[in-house]
Image (cartoon, rainbow, N blue to C red):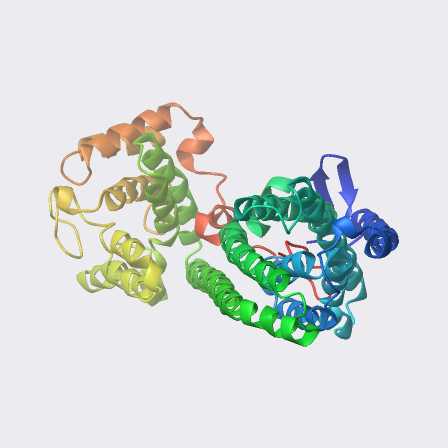
Length: 501
């Protein structure tokens, strides 16, 4: 990520700088605050003058206090499930407040639940969530009571109608919550609406609707008991609310544990990717170190990677096998780090001792790569890349189909590269001579099918490709799939945006 004033993203509105997006996000959040302030007036009027949109009976102050505590508790322990995305189980407190204490109380619980955020001095975040959640909770409460009144009111409506009204209101809450926060996510995090729904809402919808089903049953039991006991005290009604909430709080705890485990799994995955990258970069460093001793190795490995990958794709290997072919080609000579300089750069023919030292590079490479847990297949490919099809190669002396196919592919590309390159002990051969050598050794040194595929590929490309003249090890290494970029960590103090329910 570049500097704030130069960073660009592609959005439906074109190319916006990060600073521009932040400005618009601030204006949108300010607009939410103004709208929430206006909603306070509407809800106050409803509380004073519109009894049909309120729960029957006296206002339960102790119930309000209890639900405020629950709302603050659930919001205090929000769980981050992705980059800049947080969730909590506060929906239960908001929805129970709407059904038991009324719209203004539901709005108050939603706003007060952000007290832990204000204490952390994240004022913009506090304004965003206080206003957004207040609008969502207050709007849902009005919708719930208006819908319930359409069915005949809480006293006369059948239980099935209460359930239907609650279910529809729960869906309304989720839709409204998404509509309020999706623009903030888009402006602050450049997260599109589909991605925001997929990452911030979809994984937790089953939990929300399960909690909703439980809470609807508890709400109905509470209303049934309160309406049948007209003289019930406010304190006793609060205790009843607490009794109803106990199983729900247990479910909320399970929700928190699940979300934390999910977050831990993602962190472990990211850590594994970092370790994988570090291991590969260490292997690349070893190849670069070899290149300082023998400047043939890195360019040679890059050329082999280019040709071997093209062969693997032409043979229609799986995407995973193609990726392994590419990476193994780059790493196939990493074991030469253990071969003395005077042997690698010998100007004449090597004696038996020198050849024995060179031949150890297959086993050295296998040992280096085998130490990394996820590279077992890669290590095996490197170990067998100098085996011959007729079984007379090294170091294991296996042949035919016993040699991994990727090793047979690398063997052909490796040998061809050696022939068309200058070496201390001889000048490079022409491409025609090198091709003739491949043909002459089909079925003995090389897999015939791999040779035929490679020769067909060479004929389809120009002379630069056939000689591997313009390949670069560092460029090829950056193409490695396993070095994909990790998602950026949220910046310190950046506004996290997500579904609060």
